[in-house]
Length: 80
Image 1 (cartoon, rainbow, N blue to C red):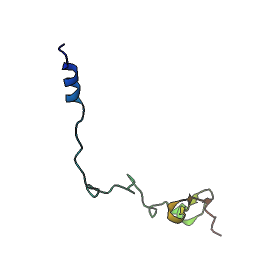
Image 2 (cartoon, rainbow, N blue to C red; image 1 turned 135 degrees about the vertical axis):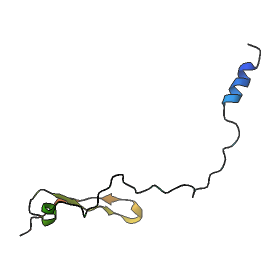
Image 3 (cartoon, rainbow, N blue to C red; image 1 turned 60 degrees about the vertical axis):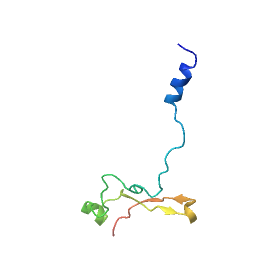
Image 4 (cartoon, rainbow, N blue to C red; image 1 turned 90 degrees about the vertical axis):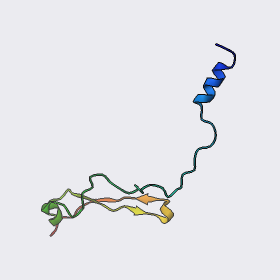
């Protein structure tokens, strides 16, 4: 192999220069999308009526500036 041939081959393979600038607003915003999401309104009637104990409910709570979060879970109370 001639002198400098390996260096020329490496230069061709390596990235040179800066990448092109892409704007921040480009593309579609995909945050907050849950695939195959089912609405809370589509529930069996026995859960909605709270006839059976043991079903759980959760309430996510975020703190100031999203610095903290808590999600308390409680068993759904039986209707009396």
